[in-house]
Length: 228
Image 1 (cartoon, helix red, strand yellow):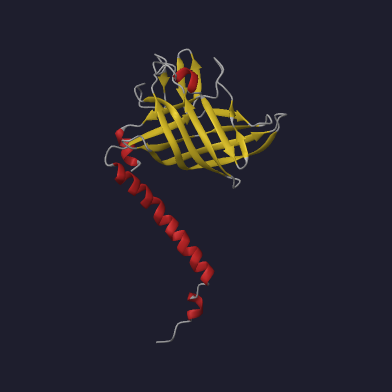
Image 2 (cartoon, rainbow, N blue to C red; image 1 turned 30 degrees about the horizontal axis):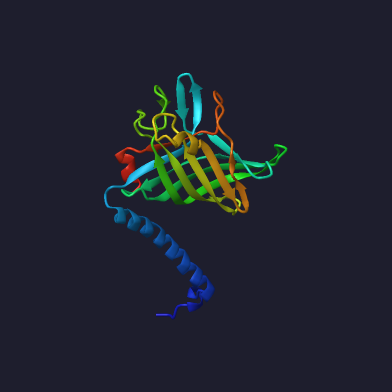
């Protein structure tokens, strides 16, 4: 048997290290998710977040595919679309954030300065709050009933397509029954950071005008199982 040419099998040390790091990253990601789910036991709920589109205000009809904006300190702003899911354990801890959407940035003169996509890379925190939807709302996102609607505050880590890292806060204030402080403390809309820019001043929704609205849903068990 002829000796093989071992030169074709040689991998530089730096390349080997990069390959090992890549494989570890691939392995650790799913393992961390499985470990987190295992730590919570069977009582894990899948939640969905959306920047919603109001298709009609009479009757109130909501769909996925909306957009929301927030301004930076100098008056420039970012506009985002998006949706995704995250898991919530029995103790209220949120983890395994997924999803993404699009982004556009504008200067103070309304000129488009950049655009792209973003991807959710993790969950920082989640806090649900009491509330109920407007009676008679037609919800095309959930399972056909309003019982799965939720209000709350979700903080996500995101990666922008231009390489910047950042965060996004999705906040939903359902107008129905809730604790006395809810109307004053829970805002409707989004804020975001992108690199060193904080788009902290959310644009509030305007009555009878589409945009700057959000909603959370509890997903059915069949969809919940798909996330595990």
